[in-house]
Length: 547
Image (tube, rainbow, N blue to C red; front, top):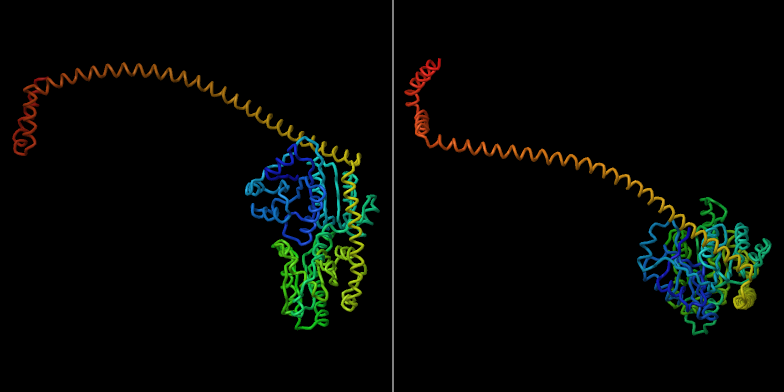
């Protein structure tokens, strides 16, 4: 089960009478690290809605675990220029309350007003065996939490192994439009009975903005630049999405292929020249092995001990990416292990090769390379020929994007397709009914438990009443015994008073004074020796007289 949280002002905004439309955005960016392409895909999608529906409440999804404090959230708000976010978390995450409390989150509230709510699943390559099931669960949680009137999918790359799952999802929830970023994805989804269009990539317009930067005096030529390189040795770059356990020997195979690639580059460029190494992922997780982590694993500096390093994600977040565009344009060619990094350099006019070590990346290649060269062919190909090939495919991509944007705008302005909207709202209402039934069952369980506790308490109370009656009887008996003992004490006190009076008479008598003198004399040895025989004779005479 997935739970949703948000800031109090977002709850107020989406439930206010002024909220005319809400757009929920789910896609490649969910807060884990900062991926160059994911950042641009979300920002591009947000920008499109701001231009076409400026009054809409835009709410991207963000995994709560990725946001630890208010400062992190403020950075995202500033970069994406949207104050409203929906945080999601799974029931198994135990620290949800403490994380949410760190910056004032509260459970999401959804009013009964059926205002227009759009769910837009923007781009990425997550519908596959790596991340597809996880993403589908999140999307369906949104569909079951909100009464979604329009449902859009765009910019997707689909793994063939996951298409049956996605097709079944589409038949159940009936998205209004489905767009894919590569022709292969369009083909395999259409063959599964789902209408799909070539939408291109959702970061395309954002990347084009940098291609429009006017040329400046390029001092970079003085640096003797050679080529650009981005590396990614994360598991998904070379493993199979249907392989449960990674073959350890595959690591060595990939590393050897990269060594061969480095050797080829050394034969093409002056060893005294400067390559540009580019990082595209700001992510501290161990499983993310971007350029800077790959430097150590590949021993790249053995071949290229001097280089210029650029982190285009960091530059993007700081608003300074345009400053390095002239520098990037100065390299003769670029080699990348990242789809969006490769697309970026192609848009800048640099002959670029996207490396592919598995089917996932081969499919990425097919979306942005009209001709699949081997790397050796790419190095020997005429650079101007490569530029023309890139321009042709980018032109087709741009044309497809324009058509898709027109289709999207028209679709969202039209009334929702009745059957799809009814099916989605019916599903929402069924889930809402299930949620209410679950609450009723929970309350009934609580009532049953309280009734059982009440019966137990009543029995305990009756037992205490019985014990109280017994103790009251015992207390009465003790009171009676106490009264008898009180009488006895009074009599004893009277006797003691009489005895004390008699004792006083004795103490004041002449005989008692003689006795006291006698005993004082007996304390002395001389008198004790003298008087003891006399006392014995007296006792003997007294004894005879008694007979």
